[in-house]
Length: 222
Length: 205
Image (cartoon, rainbow over all chains, first blue to last red):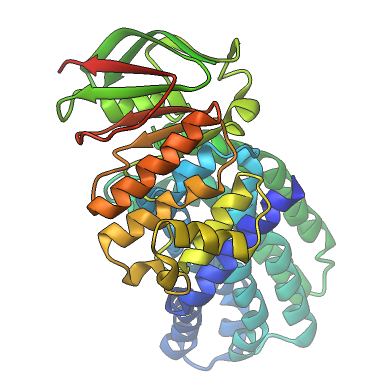
């Protein structure tokens, strides 16, 4: 059973590697959006550092979302999804493998780049650490929840917008706790409560999202 | 043994067919015939469990395929009209993946011999995206040489193939039937396949 996870995970990473430009789109979006704010607002340290948590988190969230509609679309149109649906493997596990690969490709680079981007907002060091931690704990939830939306809108025209409408409301708790964690550390408070809640969001969606996504895929593929 | 009872298929608000029953036992071959749009592909997808029927049920060895999905699926190889190949992966990688997904452990030599059998060995290390339609189809069909499942459900397997490949594929089907396999096929071509029992299922539009 673990094998099934590994083979799909490896295949999706290989595919992402062969299509590096797709990966670059997500990352470039994150860098551009989060760099436009300091340019537009001006170099005032107090303003920048107070908007930083929210802006960086929203940018990370949107960057993850623009790649969501691609999560199952290619597999759907070339028939690989059909083969996965009738494979003698638990579908939720295959789905989890796809989501994990999506996070490695679209989530992890954002987490790793965040401290660099955070410097533009003159965030202090300990806030940068909390920013990375909060993204590390929160972005898996974004990929997991987003997968449900991507599966539900599979094959629907204009699915990009529909995914946003479905998924963004569900992202709100993650955004609040994520930005809250960074803001708390800026004000010399402990970010632990926020980080714990973020981890809870991720764990909860880790359990529920693959099952929901699998069910949604079965419906969409009919 | 595959049994379907009372299958009714509704697509949107259009009734494709109703109350279709079929029975297929070891060594049995079934041709599904009908005009374009008569619901042949839908029937095959229904039998695979990709579509759920409006009414009726499919049984594999006496158990409903809904309740015993994993056991049924490990005995099933389905090749639909979509090839299920990734354009960015090579033919070898694609086949390795689909074999492993079906829980068959195969090495590169076995995959290569499957590709050789259907005459696309020289495409083994090319990305599938650069192959022609017929070559892609042949790479997809090479899965039949790697499959150990008893039931093959093939949607238009002979379409887009040249005459030589049609003969090769027919021979592979012959061997499958001789080993006690089962196959359900839609086709518009006259292909000679030997089997213990041959049935025709005609769908009317």
